[in-house]
Length: 268
Image (cartoon, helix red, strand yellow):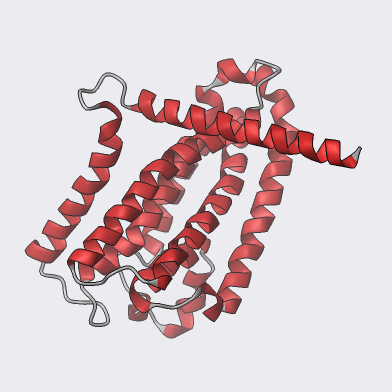
């Protein structure tokens, strides 16, 4: 009996996963519907952004290396995970409202709507990672065993984003200001996260404040994987803190979403 239940749960989970992937691909196509290049813009856009950063900071400003490492590589290693985080949160926050016709269908699993936006952003992010590795190789920094650690930090980013998206997307149904707040939150955390600047320029006594930001763990993790060649377990306290905060947000977000979703059809 228990084996049958386990098998049914696995089948349902498999169906749910295929549904999310299918709808995420459809969402990606609809985003660029009507444009000449269509979904290819999702992949050209990252390349254009990286080229602009390279031209501005490497050619224009001739930025100095960070710890004897090319500034442009140091920059894009930190900004790539931020792009995924910010796009996922911004899009998933609006996912319930944008798909109100699906929310009103009793048979549709509403909780996957934020996940669809996240998976859609993940496809682009994986391409971004490939571009990132290629650029590092062009500069003479070839993939090694630490490069595989990018999958760990990508997974960490996804779990953190899912928990936050359940909170923001469910609250946004009742409080339309949440979308505006998320936009302000992203701008604020972009600049307090050491993406464009090195944490070493801040007084050491304030370093712990910046490390309280969970995105710091992700950004530094990408740089540890591509530049400093450090494993995540070499930073045990930071790792424990990140996963502690992430799991609290994940569980709270799931509980909040399930508590509020029965009221979605009434509000929408």
